[in-house]
Image (cartoon, rainbow, N blue to C red; front, side, top):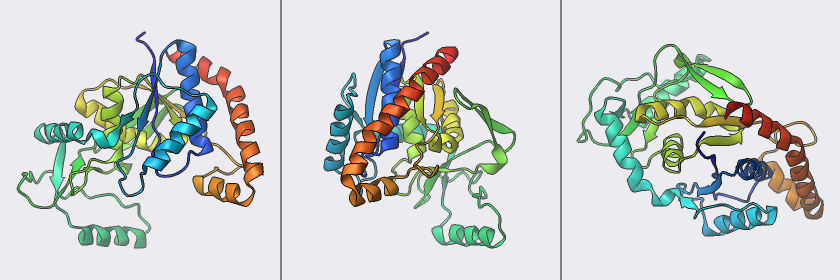
Amino acid sequence: MSSVVVRFAPSPTGSLHIGSARTALYNWLYARHTGGKMLLRIEDTDVERSTPENVRIIFDGLRWLGVDWDEEPVYQSQRVDRYRPLIDKLIAEGKAYRCVCNKDDLDAKRESAIADKRKYLYDRTCRDAGHGPDCGAHVVRLKMPVDGAIVVRDVVLGEVSFPAEELDDWIIARTDGMPTYNFVVVADDHDMRVTHVIRGADHLNNTPKQVVVYEALGYDLPIFTHMPLTHGPDGKNFPNATARRRSRNSPSSATCRMPCAIISCVSDGRTAIRNCLRRKS
C-alpha cells in the first residue's frame, strides 16, 4: 500500500467548531498511527467571509489540541490558476458545458417545482447546445450520468447508492469564472496526493458529485470515511450557531465541556477508526 496521506480542510469563515476539531483529531490520529502524513488546507475561496484572523484562530486551536501538520498549509485562494485549465479540459472533452440560462428563468422553474412539491433539478437545457467561449455570461456545468446510480464506497457506511435521476448537472464554475467547492476539493486532494478522506457525514451528499469529477479527470479515488456528526445533550446535531450561542451564554462551562467532549470522541473513536481503515487498506 502507498503511504497514507490525510488532510484537514477547514474554511476560515468563523471559529473552529468542536465537530471540526474532532475531524482534525481523527485525521491526525490515523496519520500518526500509520506513519503517514497529516496535511492542512485552508479553503478560503469565500473572499467575503474568510479572514486572516479566522485562519489564525484555526492554527491556534489545532496547536492547542496538539495537532500538528507535516507540510506548509495549502491555501485554495492561491490555486485558482490551477483550477481553470482543468475546467477548460472537461469542456473540450465534452464532460462539461457552458450554460447561459439566466437566473430569472431558473428561479421561475425552481418556484414551479416547489409549488408542485417536486424536487428542483436543472433541466439540462444547455447540455447539448455546444455554447462556445464567446456565448456571453455563463456558468459551467458538469455532465452527470442520466441513468443508473453513483455508488460511494465508504469505510463506515459501506456502499451508498445515489440514483442518477436525483442529481442534476451542477455548476463547477460560476459566471465570474470562480470554481465551486465540490470541484476544487477534488483537484486539491489529487494534487496533495490524499489517500484517505476522513470527514463528517454532512459531506456524504457531496461525495457522488466529487466521484464523478474524479472519474472525469481520470484521477484515482481516495478511501472515503464519513464519521457521525457531533451531537449535543439533546441528541441533535451540534451546529456552529449552537456552539457560538452556548459559548456566549456560559463561556466557562462551554470551555470546560469542549476538551471533555473531544477526549470522549477520541477515546471512543480511536480503536474504531483504526480497525475500520486497516480493513480497507
